[in-house]
Length: 502
Image 1: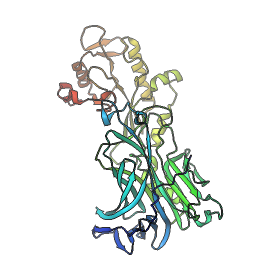
Image 2: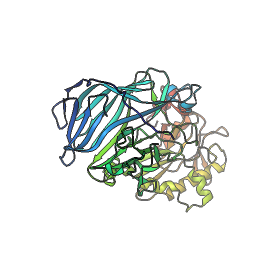
Image 3: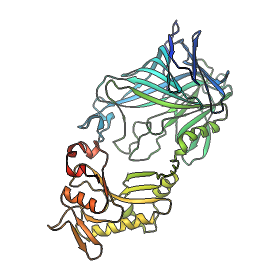
């Protein structure tokens, strides 16, 4: 893996760039500008004052220091950005799911960011302050780099605020920060910096490893966070939990954070920390990329926690923001997740009814109270018109009951996808037996010797009438994308779509 040396300013004699702080209102975060420096001061959760100094000289590191009062913790820092772009194809355009932008005939393009600030502006956003430095060129993207400061915390949000005019663009990005290494990590006369970085491994155990060279080294971590020890404290980095790493068909940990350490051109020693978007792990073709319609503002973000404590404590600060990847309980509410294709019933029939599927404990550990599963989506025999279909439904209801207890409810549903258009799921409040099509003409509701009332649906009106009688609900799954492209728009004037049960 080659070294990533990004966003290095072009050398030369440069005047300081202009800074406009007129849009900063009086409040807990203050901004001042003088003598080639823009300074932000804000209080943390303990009412201590933190300082961030930005250089207005484009030939110097953008971030002179971030520290507690006048004690620097992060020094001489440059943001780093890389964008990987591809082209959207397919009838759904930017909503196309069955698409791998990197497979376009143009091929995947990878751009290293070039940043030379040309102006600085600061503005209040509520009680926060955003400082924006224009002058970022990221391949087809242009814009600036922004930093947002939050009073009452040591959280800092870094974002590339960019746009493109190229059509059909989708992208992934890597980002991070390069900064001065602690003095203890610098080895005189050697090119590498040997300095500790800390993270939780995939089993949830804290690990500390040493930087080993200039190449970006991916780390396979839990909680998507990594921290470095510095002279007067530590720095932790982590992405936005829900907007950087999208849901995937396979939950492969692809190493979403990186670190490196090297002597740098100055020989004084540099560390780098950041997050990364691996393009592909070879498991499947359809992975989420980020859409960039022409002219839209894209915000390529990363969060920092700066601390005067060891890196282990900085990581704990991160986990307080991300709730340790667990949904916190809300009084009077239940936390629900839906549309899971585990194929649980068929596996349980094979493993035995006392088999406990791995998802049960995973969901409980995440704070999930209610999960709606959707079996018989590529497994089982949902289109069968014999007792086999009813036997599988009976087993489905029985198995879901076995995984439910006083604190966790597993609700069976089916993504039936018949008669109504697009993909849709149906959920009932009790076991309901039904065939997805009619073998013979006859009434909608018939009596079975073993299972009692059984529905035979053949038309949209049959489906919605069954749902009305059994007090169920129907919802469009992944509307306007995948096999629901064009839905529910195409059926918005139908009686079944306008029914309260849909």
